[in-house]
Image (cartoon, rainbow, N blue to C red; front, top):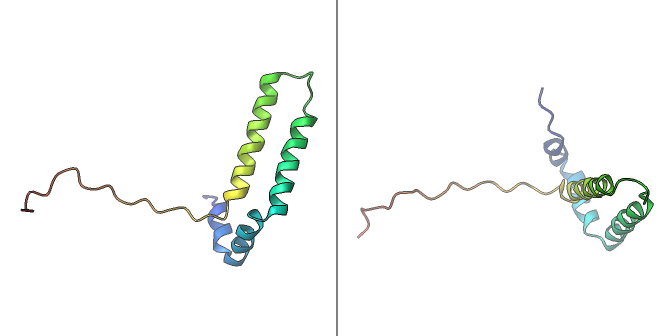
Length: 89
């Protein structure tokens, strides 16, 4: 069994369209910024600095996925042939 949550989410077109509109709204962006800043401020200064760094990086990765989950992946174009066309004059 292969799980494909992004593909399933994109298949629900109305839901994906609403999500795209939501993530570009100023109020959502402000909420995301405030949430990330609040999370950073709540991290204990007594704990390991490296652990806190990885917590912040994990939060950033989750936010990036949240912001981009409704974006359609671009199709990969085939690379141009490696050989030159010698029939062109």
